[in-house]
Length: 349
Image (tube, rainbow, N blue to C red; front, side, top):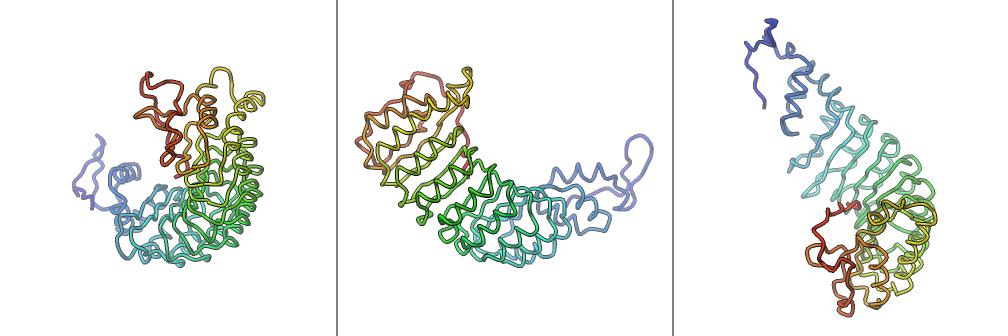
């Protein structure tokens, strides 16, 4: 824990610190900004004065450092951190249970970003608690939470309509067409959605997303084996700002989907989604079609030609075609001669 000299003198005014409560609020917050999250939690238990300051001043916290007893720690500390906006509860081994999430949601009403990834012990109770207590959520990561149902996820979207990022990777029970229809109906501001390996997702759900969430920038459908060209066509025609699309192992995808992506560029120009100055900097920047073995070189080349930020050259790969040996002839416009560009972050994670 951070230590203080009891005879410390602040500034030139001669104000001495003889007790913990004498430390000015600004100084305490500055010190807390320099220490790790574990130290902040310990500091919140030093005295009542410190607890009030920390409750007022700490807006971001991570418990990922806690290898055991995370659940009890959340139960005991949640009332101290009522101003949290970002909370990371990612675990290496399952610890978190519903009662801790319920306690957190009961106190942290200003929460905007929450990471519950790999919380294998959580059930629908947690999603219902978040719906009641955290209506301002903007980013929610529940990847790997395999016990959540589509009913609970649909309920959450009714109350957390400001969501911009939602990671459902591996949430097989929750991510169904029924849930995606609820997301499309309620979460019109959504920009990033990860549905990786949610094998119940089909065209009806993806089309509902495309119609209801036109601001989508990143969509990961890797391993969604039921989807067909209809899903890609809906995204291409309705999501004018789409930057990243993951279709790994979506083996029902054919050339029709690729041509719809290529043609969508002209539609976006006509709709004013791209200004003349920025057209070369927008549009698809990442496309993963690995293991999409039905695709042919002309169709994929059409996509590559339409979007200058899709690259096949070494070190700049953003058009991923692993497992498709017949696509080796596809080449990006730059031919590998331009300097290294700034890579776009993966918005779906």
